[in-house]
Image (tube, rainbow, N blue to C red; front, side, top):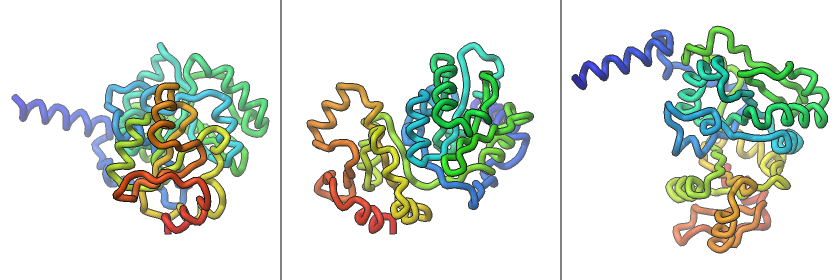
Length: 273
């Protein structure tokens, strides 16, 4: 019975990929290198929702991240949308396979989020269509423009969806977290350097010196978005590490994490080199 069940599962995977080898696909090495969703590394399953598989966001955060120099992917979705349900069946496995970092607006913040982007960046806003779901965009912070990802024919084909996304993105081993538990587990396992950011420090990792050093590095690096910790987590974090935002936490030391609040650019250049 187990053998038959395995065959059924394998057939279902082949069907969703159009019978093609998903592992043979590779990201476009000439595409921008994006961070990964560290929380997806731990908690994403095939049954996860869009809100669980993406970074559920709002206009304030997206505007701040673009201002910091971060280009990003933004998904529009809403509960009860049948087309969203269809897309979820390939989108979530893609995130599970790649830990790609994608931000999202759901039905609660879609209209207000679009309005904030349009007000802050008219050149991006004019490229956004009337609100509808699901839509997926690449927001380019360098060119200040938005590109709508063509999902026609790809919402039921994981291979085609992955191939499309790989045209736009490559990855670097920088993992971002909103879960303190996931962040600590990752850093201790990888023995890596980490950075604590809040909205005021979103742009720090895009300083040219750090960005150039990090671009081709194979070293794992973790980023904790302190802005999204709950009050209990923030209090626990401060008591345990005493680390304010905009600080480095060095987990490479066998004696335990070390707080670094000065000379960060030189330290990161040396770490990534």
